[in-house]
Length: 423
Ligand SMILES: [Zn+2]
Image (cartoon, rainbow, N blue to C red; front, side, top):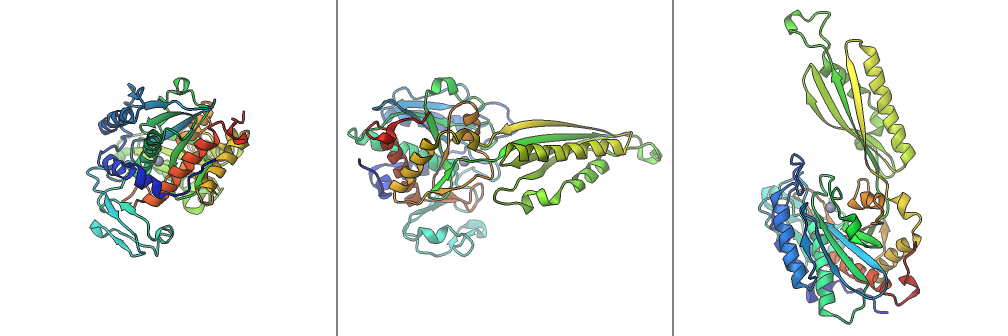
């Protein structure tokens, strides 16, 4: 069986790099303030472009739906149907407007100087030293790049272009989905799960080369509201109950050892993200993360207890909380499907790369898709320093991701014992 281990095929045989440069120039920053789907017009513009490009690549059923999800199919051999997923939006943490990508060919280990005194240096960027000789793409220092996740989109388009050029390469049936609004947690809100018809899928949305993610946080969020007694401050003695002061005391009591600032690896945390309100009434939004259900529940219970104490401490104060479940740790769904885990590792190994199985201290669309019944682990794109002006991607590493996907398709093309779906 042919496997692919030359990352340069991506650049030599497909226009994935030109695609990436075209895609990042479209502003697709998602907007959490807009409840529409997609949350920004640029995402629909990008989606419509992708539909045209998919049709040019022979995926005649390519379409964009009312919520901005782009889907398409490529028929293949064998009985398996595999989904390939990437997201079209970019993070609102940094500007994605008027992105001017810069291509650094044959990177030789120097510090990359960008506008606004932004530098990307091998001294503080451990990945850069591993990319000597690679083509590196950055933004110009004034915006993020948007390789998260337009590199993923470009890699998937590269795979489709390669398969169109090489009709002799057998592969299973493919279902493609480019999703809006992943960065604001709505990437699967309107995912066409029932029509998608894949046995499993992968999101191409990981970071450095070799990374495979089968595990995410188990995520909850909580809003705690403090209602005090509001009176004229000149005549407030013995009457006023200042909600802000009580919220401040509550925040002070949150366990510091279980904060994002003091946790790493498999440790969970409680993180107050934002506050709104005034002395009469105010609220704090917290996110609660752990890798186990029990751990996440225990952290929620800690906050509940502090809510209770805050309310008990002052009769004039009303403290209420509302907890929401955000997404599950995908590992609890993956555990029963070891063949898929193994096949993904083999696909990466056959590309000549050591797989690095990393639990994500965050979520992916795959976590919620697993909950909806579609197993969806995550594969690297080669992009790093996401969501800021130092974001960059190695084209060579994009090429390894491309090879890993082709290898996975080979494993499921119905030619070997690996070709069976493990359910
Ligand atoms: Zn992403």
